[in-house]
Length: 105
Image (cartoon, rainbow, N blue to C red):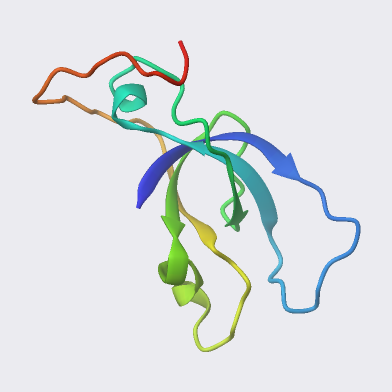
């Protein structure tokens, strides 16, 4: 699981019958520097399935790959990323120095 910040949402014009009810969010995964408060996260953005009603600006637990479809087993779903939790706070105290993030701030 990685920690990510919600930066937007996806709007669907039409929906496949295989998709579960929920929303799709655009998130930016946090790297070590962002967790330490020295950046905005990575330059990558991902779309994840959300059934927990996360909002823009929330921190979420991003589960990727095969594990993202595990909550729906035995049904097959086309998800590669899933919102496992909404985080209220993150207390990250790095043991090693964290360099400034090359991705921003």
